Length: 633
Image 1 (tube, rainbow, N blue to C red):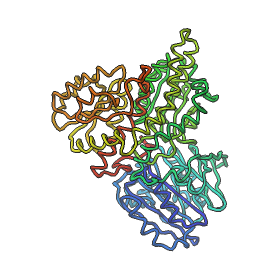
Image 2 (cartoon, rainbow, N blue to C red; image 1 turned 90 degrees about the vertical axis):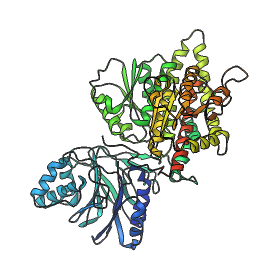
Image 3 (spheres, rainbow, N blue to C red; image 1 turned 180 degrees about the vertical axis):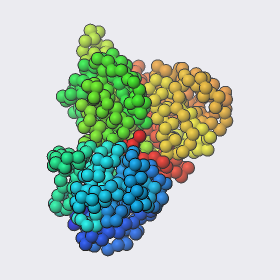
Image 4 (spheres, rainbow, N blue to C red; image 1 turned 120 degrees about the vertical axis):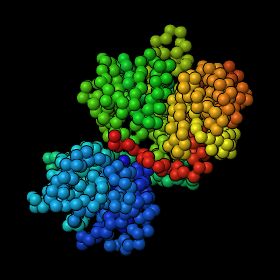
């Protein structure tokens, strides 16, 4: 889950590496480091515990005209404490490397290193790979490329390594087995390799994704791909990324998370327009996609994901159950992969991952493929490993998400799930002789295009909703615990709301189905505890509101989220956060179908967590102990 950047070319190396690492700091920020190489083979290394700001002055103080290549790293610690000694890059004689992932057989390699009379400087597993390369080069009298190729098969686990040598300073060699690597090159700039596309987009939007077992050789004159095991050249397709570099900046917002919360109306529109021209066409008329055919033929759908993506999958189950006849189960990928799962005829497995690199989700899809079960995936990153591993893929169009706590990517995942449920529901509606099902599907499709409007109203700075969120955050700031409760569509949102608060505010928060309140959690309710109840006007509303009496009787503070005209809910709550919805329109229907209220509620809960974290002074974009892309178990 670390961030890697390597560059060789005719531009100033230090600023390119530093800017690239800042783009990747969401992947790890325990420590950071940069190694710069001049044409004569001399290198200098700068590293420190903490964020990139700690090394930036040291790097920029150097005459940048001297250096023509280098590698940088921002770390999320696994082996060894997050200190300067364990920070990357690591040096062994003339070799300098950075590493992402875990070397599972590091103890065996460590014994070999000690047996040959060497003592590693750091506590990391990463440094050990440089010794393996050195041993190969010295024993066989070979160059860096062949040394890396011979050494890489000797390490086990999900890893990517980028390495340079003072003896070949214009050369970067990188290998991938699990942890992602992306490369880019053009004649005017040179060659760059990174653990994500974002550092590359400042220089080119055309990238190459390395496959597992790939080795890339980067020089300013070009890049070459090889099979790391056979040494034979391989071809990799160029992928065009439709994100502009300006979308990677904060654009005036105090934090990336706040910016990305406010980008959700655009996220919804961009994803809708990517799949449908407008709402006047046949509802849910997708362009030809093999995934649609897979779902249409499915007799059972298994959704697997981790963290926030799992919460999206839980919501997906509600939508598929309402609009289709397809049985659906939703599992945590980390649990599913170690169960003795039995696959049935007609079963389809869907993986959901924002980054497309989530280790457990990827492992499930790989295992399922071996069992010849159809797989499909939802991800936000074109060219990611999961997008290549799944047999069919549905991309979301959230654009780059920098904040570690996922916001707009979650909304895009929810949207993709409701679109797929709507598509299957439309097929059922065609066969409904009474036409009621088609009316329902038509309404769902039409109102999806209205969601961005309502969400923009809810997020409007200074509006009634945003003001209510801020007041509730200030009043509950010092609560000793938070309980989020909801029913139906609101239950997964309760889980997600609690997760967001834990992630960025570091407070005790739990999400529950409201019906479970009496089955244990009610013992925790007392003065000093806050209960956040999600109660839009839906079929579960009366049951949810009845639970509030129990909360109130025990002295806990109530923050309620519901329709703007809900006076009953407002009267029961200490703080009422109004959604810009009315319970009834002139035609007797609610402003928005109950199945679409999650698209308004989720951003409001994100904003509440943001305001609490802001008042607490935590690091909102880069919360402690977390990384954006979980590429190791």
